[in-house]
Length: 261
Image (tube, rainbow, N blue to C red; front, side, top):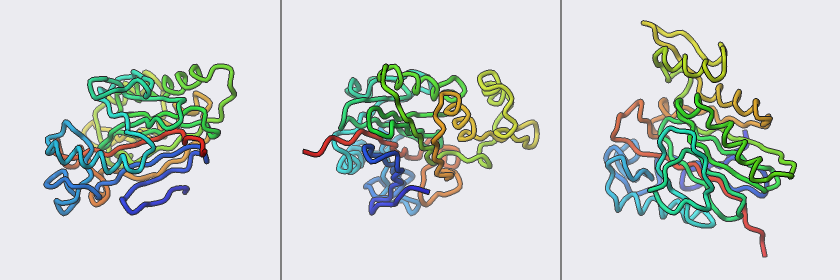
């Protein structure tokens, strides 16, 4: 598996030599309490709307920004299918669930705490995208819409797209109702490899499995999956399902590396 762990505690997928990308883990910041690490201190929560101290969030975001070529483009995610240009994201007043860019140095950014982060890039560095793929967005086509937007932005160019699936609620951890399964079936059709019956009319759903189907539909066959569940590893990850509303958010970031002068 192609990823490394930095001193800060990050997963860094390899999506090509022209692409920078990483996913922040739970520790390495200044948040405390439920937004801290598993021991209640030094948490790297980047979510500004989860009850954490605002000054701590700003400091955590500045720590993250030290690892990127420019300030990450923070936005408000709403579990929809809106895809925007990261270049035009000025602050969190903007609501969307995916960002793309063709501009070197602009940092596409999404926040997650069980939802699936999908990072997509052209291996030669012509376009990059970050996707917040919660079940509602995924079942409504957010991945396909993002890839379509990337291709439209690079119309006339032949792209070689690769994708990385980050930490999320795992197949064994995402037990849910039939309405979620029905939403996925309405968009994807039957996908028995991504759904398993639980107890009392419940089902287990594989977000990453459905994302792979969506990517394959759009011609993205180079897919790397970290295979990690946020729910099952409290040391490394925040989890809304495990801990409730008072928990932190991770950042998934991707950018085209600026040309070296």
